[in-house]
Length: 396
Image (cartoon, rainbow, N blue to C red; front, top):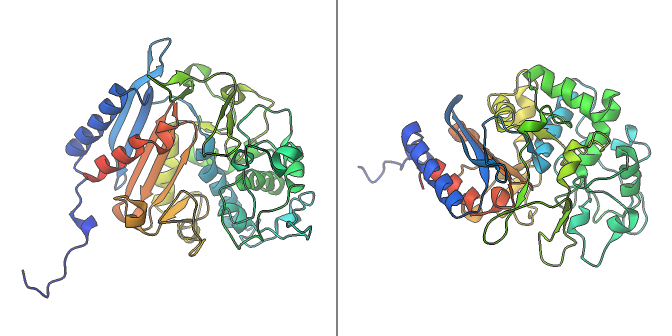
């Protein structure tokens, strides 16, 4: 080879030959199940528009010895965020809202203020990319904070509040920073859900159905459970094996934080308000279908220009806590520096997860989409399984 001949980029050397990829992912699943870090999982991989790997592994219900099934339903937790974000962008595509609109036009009762009491303006874009100055109650100090004082629900515990009442309470808590000047993972998608409902003139559940589920013929994605027998119980990592979640779990995610409240029964409560950030239920196959719709250009939901905007880094050089090497787009993280993120994904890849045990990523450069829904928190969201799965996909 001539010394002047350019080296091929690493990604051009990658192989996604289905048989070999399947053996690698099978090995990861078998080891993770053997180590009792997961109870059950559904993993799907699409490459260049073709489903090249599909497997339901382990148990959906360990106590009843029911095997995992490919069409199992899961509490989506934060997998709800990209779905609700797409719904907002459908409204943008329809010309009903614009990304840089002040949200007060649609939510006049939501009146955020800065720490000094001065009123603040939040845009649709800032909600989508989590630069609105909001946070989550579970990220507050274990000693308490404004969200707890105001009685704000994070959307994952049972609550008698309506969506509007929860947002009214939220608006009484001061913003952490001036919108647009910082980044923080937050309840912003719940606010976005309230805005979508207001613009659509319906509940958020009906809006999701009209804007996403019907156009894509999705039957299982929504705020209610389409078939209770397919809903997997929720498990929590413990020693020597995951344990079935109790009625209420309060789990410290980071040292010194208040802890995330998970009540699995919320998914079966028809009175629970529609939490845009964490309240949806769905299947791995339908979520893969939505991601592939976006990766292929967005039709029939969005024009390609909006998908490109969604997948572009909106947060500049702001540091994302717990996501080194990544920025945030309009609904999910966007990879900026694979070395910093310690991942084999290509620059520009999209990724997020879900607290009940889910991970997913889309690598547009490789035309690759990977969805891994599990019934085990938190291994399925940020445990070693997610690293091993990614490495197996790329043959690392």
